[in-house]
Amino acid sequence: MLDSSTLHRGAKYFMDCGRAATHEEAMALLSSFGLSIHVGESIAHSREQQIALLTLVNLARRSFLAGVEVLGLPEAKPLTRLTRARSLARAVMDYGGHVTGQANTAWPAAVIGDATRPFSQCPAWRLTWSGWRGGIIPAENVHQRLQDDGMLPLAPAFAAACCAAEAFAFYAGDHVMAGHRPLGLSLWKPGVDWLIPDETEPKLQWLPSQLWLIGLGNLGQAFAWLLTTLPYAEPREVKLVLQDDDRLAESNDSTSLLSFTKHIGHRKTRIIGEWLDARGFNTYLLENRFGPWTTRTDEDPSVALCGVDNALARASLERPGFGLVIEAGLGGGPEAFRSLSLHCFPASRRSADIWSKDIAASQANVEHLPAYQAMKKSGVDACGLTQLASRTVGIPFVGLIAGAMVIAELLRRLHGGIALELAAGSAFALDAIETVPMSAEPYAFGHLPVEP
Image 1 (cartoon, one colour):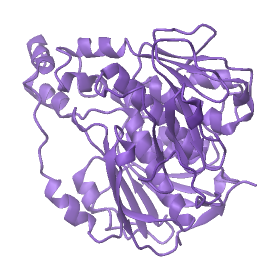
Image 2 (image 1 turned 90 degrees about the horizontal axis):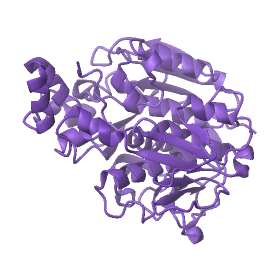
Image 3 (image 1 turned 90 degrees about the vertical axis):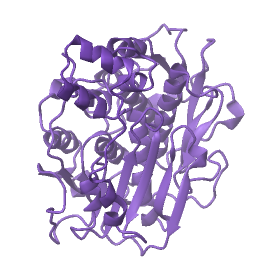
């Protein structure tokens, strides 16, 4: 019987907005979503194009249950640490994609590199990036394409998340412009036009050397994925503390980039730690919950990245004495699941002042909606129904967008860029991200050079 640990968190969107009368109906909708990804020969020699491809496959297969197909893939070896496979085709399959030579013309398409726009009546997006800017454009708008350079590997990963977001909006029918507009962001200057070249963007020179990751769900796994895209010369010199007290459930497969059904029941710290260890990083595991009882020593990382949906943990972020905390949060309801926010501490307000009032707050009740009443009639008891209704809508592309903004905050501070106290917005409207800048001391929490 369906319960909170097996609920597909993307299907919950259609249940909570009332479009699906049952969980089965919601899953049937997701099972009609598919995506074709077209690549060209240039991907064999481009680490950034491979990052874009693997990120998009990994994101899309969790929400587009009809399938994710890749066309035009040449024989090539992986150039990115995102995979340990010996071939790029094997990496695509490992992350849930299907390599084929015949496109499904009933599906929308993504175009990467020198591939041409497929002939189809469905929307097609071109992933494009340059410097610290990344996003998508309608594939026919070739004049808007950026240089697709290798300055910042976060940019192609961010472009992949934008593509997944627009494809989902196209299928969901909840944004009239999905498929007909650019969507992207400048990670150097959030809020400016990301399609316009910016001569102030610096070449990437430094990367963080010590980080404490609080929470290994949707956001925490996005942090891990994005850190792996960065060009560390010696990943073994990077110290990562991973903290989470939870085990992977079936529902995590629908929201989190490093969660797979074969790992159900295993502790998140161990699965994510093993994945990072295999890519050369130096990990330490904490298998207890973060809260006011958490302490740190001078040997521990001074920078924490927080991605937990827990007001008590958020209110306690400054207690251990970190030099810098970057916290990301996601919306949860059918109107807000694309919303995201970023807070940095220390700041003008303390974390306890922001979240203490939310510790006992209750969520909106959706148990009256048809999908939940159908479950009640099928035999789900009151406790189980409440647990199902209380789970938030979760889509992995929103977590990756927020995760990229968090990692970019670190990199901006390392390169003398603007420091943000707050950023907030929606994956629907990245051009409308609102930011509050702050004064910050030079980054003094450990750094390493990029690979030569």
